[in-house]
Amino acid sequence: MERDQDSQRILVSPKKMSQIYFNVKEFGAIGDGVALDSPAMQRAIDAAANTRGGTVFVPAGNYVVGSIFLRDNITLHIDAGAVLLGSQNIADYPIVTMRWEGVTRPTHAPLIAGDGLRNIAVTGRGTIDGRGEMWWKLHRAKTLDAPRPRLISFANCTNVLIEGVTLLNSPAWTINPVRCENVTIDKVTINNPADSPNTDGVNPDSCRNVHVSNCHIDVGDDCVTIKSGIETEARELLVPCENITITNCTMVHGHGGVVIGSEMSGGVRNVVISNCIFVGTDRGIRLKSRRGRGGIVEDIRVTNVVMTDVLCPFTMNLYYHINARGNKYVSDKQPQAVTQDTPIFRRIHYSHITARNSQYAAAFLYGLPEAPIEDVSFDDVSIAMADDAASGEPDMADDIPAMQRAGFFARNVRRLRLRDVRIENQVGEAFDFANVEQA
Image 1 (tube, rainbow, N blue to C red):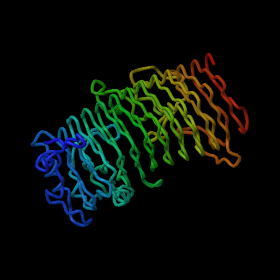
Image 2 (image 1 turned 45 degrees about the vertical axis):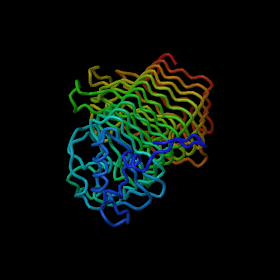
Image 3 (image 1 turned 135 degrees about the horizontal axis):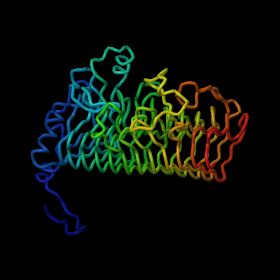
Image 4 (image 1 turned 60 degrees about the vertical axis):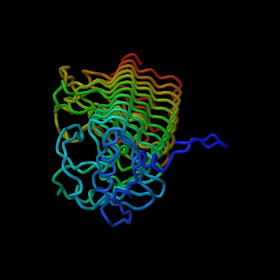
């Protein structure tokens, strides 16, 4: 290393640079969009790991890749003009055991994966295109031997950074950290077709200290979903998802802008959502669970959000019926015994929010009679229903009639506080409450 006397810059010799950066082309990557380059990329990652870490550099080019596994202290830097193309050969995604939709099971390995690692990153201005259409077709045909690969998924990792990259056409969930700590997702663009199945944007699952910021997310399912496992996992193994911030993001299409649940048996707490814009999402802020799931969702703050063309801006649904439709225990509107299987929603606060051209209802809050939603507030919230609103279910629950331009609907809520809440252009009562205590 030497110093430039004129500018006082520190110059790094080419030999020194080669020890810091590991160019995948030096390890055999072709980048022609035809050859399988993931073995070469894995060699570069392993070489970096053998020198205690470094940056694996992907220069401009089109690289066909199957699953790639990071190591400790590795940054995978995908430069502008570089595109990773998901292999169309199922064999390039080995079967591994990971949590998927709340259950630990064999799944196809993610395109970029890691387990039990520290100090890992995926950065750059390049693109990762999962080319997921093949997987979507196999999923719809129900011919897969294991769940589809996620685009990026790390498990049991600490100090994770995903920054700057564009992520396209994920086979399933796009970014899915599981039981990770200190995760930062910044300046990421995610685009999956609106009709692609279960292609959620960002899904932290049983993680601590997650920061999602400055992202644009346009997907075929929920844009951001916070999860913590389901009841089939032993209770002592369930871990909460906590200390989550989501800020300065745009969410487009998708089933929900920011969603909590329905996999929340480990609990979700300490979540702040701020300075976001939702356009055309089915729901805006959506919380969902049901009897049998257990877990507590608490201490949620949502502020400075603008929504446009959202079917229902706010939902809290403790009768969520996906995979339990017709189950009488789940759907019964009469009180049941309170047990460890009873989910709890409490201390949830919304402020400074505008929603325009809403469709089904201004808000849909449906707690359990034995466990009402507790301590909910709306402050400086303005919701206007669309003149040409469609009719449909404000959320997914048995025995709930379709709604069209309905007002603020609430059932089984305790301590609901409304301050400067305006509902415009609704049909019927602006506020439709039943079994709401201390409103």
